[in-house]
Length: 333
Image 1 (cartoon, rainbow, N blue to C red):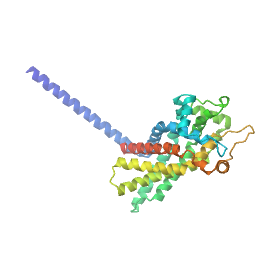
Image 2 (cartoon, rainbow, N blue to C red):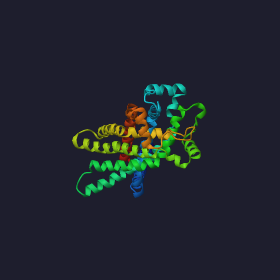
Image 3 (spheres, rainbow, N blue to C red):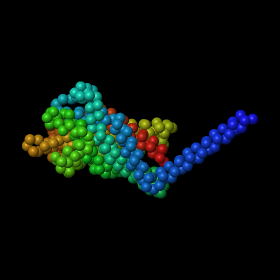
Image 4 (cartoon, rainbow, N blue to C red):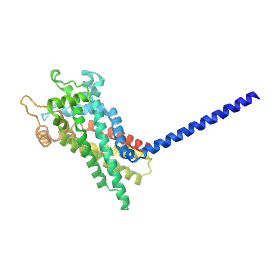
């Protein structure tokens, strides 16, 4: 009898505990849902999700970006010059130091994503939300021209905000190419930004801003506009799963982003790496001068040198960023 009473008491306690836990879980979910659906949080989420997605992607792709920058800086000023392969560059970096040197500039890369990708994906989602609502009110679908406009505008605005971090990244990645006596040996992104500002002036943090903005606009046109359009077309004309649609659309977007943006990325790297020579002059006066000199002295194909490496850097980065952003958007919808 006593055993039966104890068993009933235990069952009763277990039931009450389960009810309390379920109630707490439901209340927590309700609180989270209420917070996520406040106007301020809804407006901020595209920016937060975009920044987190970009930082995850950069952590994965950083070694490829390091190799891409070294390839672009090889043979500067000569029509022939060395033609290093991605494998030889990676081997040289590892042989001259250690494998973690492939992650040189990661702090600057993460800061850049926290600023640049937060802004570009946030602006793009915000613009697309407005355009989608306007198209819905007019009884039509959002067109490719509208997607392209949203991508170009979001990229240009974000690039201006993120240029200092981008500059610090290039300086940190190219520092190892200098003679030992001339290296800055930056301790991190804050040290790089502070050193550039002290030695060259605050305005120097926006060196290469013109090609950076144009590159960002070209990249976002290729990435976001084509991703959005490809996903819409795949949804309309195929029976692929949502996950497969996202993966396929991001792969398509990666190719077009690489193709449209590489020449501007090349010029941006050259301008951000340059420093005054013994005569006190910079090698290039600006974006147009850099395009002209490289085309004349090194040939037009130099702008697409390292396309394979660039695609391997851009396409996976685009895929990881867009997939993570899509997933975070689904979690917080």
